[in-house]
Image 1 (cartoon, rainbow over the protein chains, first blue to last red):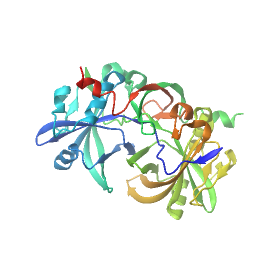
Image 2: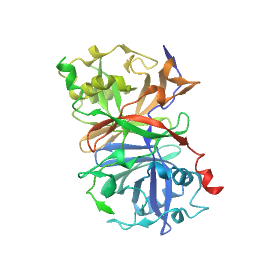
Image 3: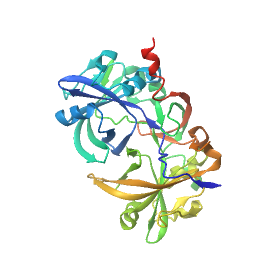
Image 4: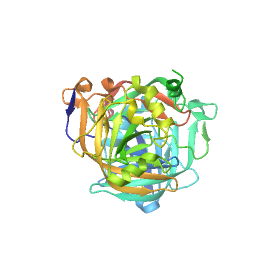
Length: 185
Length: 185
């Protein structure tokens, strides 16, 4: 039976990311799982306006999106619990820079994307930053051939409904393929 | 070692959804995994402009986001393989309506959200539709207490990198909680 449960966002789980930006010329990081894909090369970050990192993204027009693995779950959660106003989160990790020079990235995260801010969509309590991916860096250990293999990345997934982090499970099927079996039945 | 692998979107896996809209007064559905969360109550759909469903979303200013479970992976993939211009996809499922009256939803999907279009963000090849969630419907079987339990939903996750569908794995930790252990060490 269907129950109307209110107007509850149930578009989960989402990949948990750590977003990096320079704030006052210093690297700062914050944990964001309210993310999205706009078109293949553009991603969005729904960031509450209280975040210290927002200031840096607006200042520099650049940011990074880092994908932490399961074994970094404590640091990842901690990075969302404390503000860069009160604590220098760059002490938790090694920072490196890429093409853009102003998008600090986290060495310990197996996937790092540096992004150029192309749009900001304004919501009452959130800045939604839309970034064009300029370059992606990957640990060799998480590639299979030339492609990122999420079984090796072991990303942290997030759902708001019970405030849980989740592991990724097994591969299920090939997209744009498994559905063809319906027509041959 | 880090390798620069181009400008590859690696913000995956994403939840696979089936988006519903009325097109020419008839229910139509399409599979979309390039989705996002803008703020807690607003979600985005990055939909290639070729989709037939886009016409209906623009016409009515409403749409639904349905979360298919693992056992519907063939129908879900199929729904993304064929166009509503050529095939009546409403024959694949039972349609129901909620508060908005013009956002067709899929009975067989355990979670359904009806949304009001509040913004369209234009990209060269994509319409990004931003919807405010107006009401959410859930099968009683996927609730634990009053909250949606994704272990019971068994959503289909998607990554573009190898064009794979994935299962959700096990619960890993509590968000806004596990990180506190770092400060007590």
